[in-house]
Length: 452
Image (cartoon, rainbow, N blue to C red; front, side):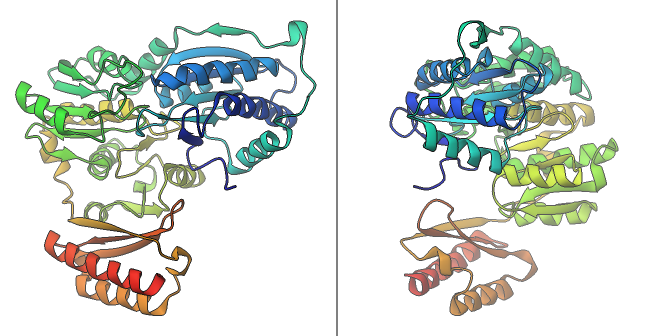
């Protein structure tokens, strides 16, 4: 069996891969491991639990709450809130840890469970490993259970949404008065939060789509993975910009008034310039992954801003930011971390900050995003190959080197073995789409021949 915890908690098909029994067992294991590490020493432990609107979240929430309370942990049930809201409240309420139930941008049948350490950060790998080991070793065995007054108590914390919105408003550099906005909440956790925050900040909300969650429609044809409805609504209503979230609202993508998609790289570029202008971009540096568009890197170089690149995954971006004290980082997918104000990617905060930059400069979003030009990017997944040899096959490496020479300074090649599947991803960027497609197909064929 592989590692149960992935890069973003435990995730899988709800009631098959992620069952009520597993959710309960992992919660008991988390309480025991954190307790053994001394996290609760000298006080009665308290945890917050939040979820996105998926139907399966209802029974998984009940299982998590039962596991925690049976372990002697008091529980503040937050209900449906974005992942970054649960992270914020973990810190703001001073509780010992947090739990979020969500599969983010995944389809509705999936779900996930993520534990947050005191302060609202994701747990270290070593602690997740200890929780997994405890769960697998003791899941079916008896343990010393608290009784009487020692069992955990459960109550709803209904003020969480308003507390989170007030936090968002408190960190905005300027109001959004006069700005016309459309919001797509993906029928997810931001369906109430995002429109409320934008209105309170002064924006005129011309339309809200994807904000009628019924437990079954999360991410279904709307949100940051399906920008078509948002684009249509922006053009129909003549909005200045549109903001799209994913199911748990830790991501944000945007659409400008002409209907053009503004991806995470462009959002990072816009925010980087604004933060530097305000003297708030630590060391004039942005952190992003190796998947960021080359156009993003070239734009930052031109503006005199340094770029630190990490492996793919927001946790690696966050690790680099925390280690070096950087304030801005993120991914092309729209997962943007503003570390002065959030411990994880926050789609609502990102959208507000992007809108604030438009309002402050008086410039259209298209003009601001024009600081960078996205180079055409083509990716081919080559399946059924021995991915372990991708970094050492001499003929493949020679083909990559030849392709990089052909592309020169206006393109690049990235070979990336999948972390979960027997495939190698071949990504090529070039000055035009035809060249990117041609080079990518050529390298993909080399991968098939050499690694099959």
